[in-house]
Image (cartoon, rainbow, N blue to C red):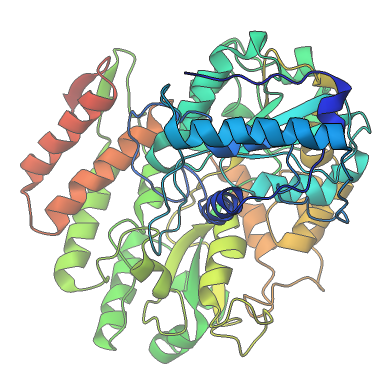
Length: 550
């Protein structure tokens, strides 16, 4: 038995009850906690699987009913309207029906699974947020994403401009198990006929082309209405990756994501005799020098890196060939094999701790008890992940004295690279294109807003003029980085990013390759066996691709 509830009258927007259930509260808390921490395909490396999309479930149903137990939007005072007796009865009846379905559903609707203890992810179920403290408009602006990063930017830099007639519905599906893409794929397929269609959805660099080169995304210029002048100051690579095969720009990003090498100042002083970024860079400017410093770190009891995956993005973003060639054959680039050789050598020499990206030991290595010299991080990684991991007490002030806050610095490292990035897409079939255009313009084109965003958050905005202004500001510096102006280094690196070899299979093949090579690094498989395992896993994910060579 399936139940589809439609409330398309104004009563839907006015019935706001005070019914709050422990079930909803627990599911919301767990999903939101995981969604905020989980960074996405290019960020936390959750293995990609070919699972089915989650059904709406209890939480999604309650979100659609606009229950007052939904979380309040940050930045706005909470208001709860008193429902009339009729409204209360209708809502209570619907809730009872929903609870009955939740307890004994005969049609396959399932409750979200519990989050694993200590996991950085929530269960792969969507958290549908419909805050009651926004104007009770008759139209819905529906936004799909995998964590709260974009929601934070939206709230801080656009929410005040939201048209009064609109109500926002955030559909947040964490990335683990490929759940976000599965949910997005299923819902985009029916978007044109949906009662409340998707208006905006977010994508990442590793799978951008999967959505950019389809009819599910609108042309940012031709359909949405941004001008070439609006987009002129965006970094070229952020436009290249979001341009379809017909030359149409299909998404915009508020951020650029060049990468740097973040290192511990105290360890640099102990081993290298200096923590000055220019002097440290001179010692790390190519891979041969990097290896020599790794040996010096080992001699003093430190590790150069934390784990197997740490340098992967530097190598994978400097390949000569894409993962898949024109004949649909998988190609393992020589630069990826250089990563394999280096990582195997570092493993045997004890130059890293054998951690995996995003696991608890990797995070701990960045904190007060860590003995690791440095980490390759892009823009979001420094102000988001490294900051959190550096603190001894995340609830206390972010200041010197709290863990190793202030003990990090950054330099360019042995090669330029990028990592991640998030793009805003306008969904075909959405019914709020004018508002989508305003959102895109505010967050991805307005130089004043974007400069303020960087000064507020230390994220690196996708606007050359805004970033050049901060890069040249002698008063600007990051307290986390001991007062260093890291924006100046990002400003030098961002124009050098080359996305020509990016493709739609990058996320899945990168993850499969890394996972297979870990078996080789750990001595559990020979190199030939690990390569066979990679090709077998790739064939399961992408049966349309030939195994190829390399």
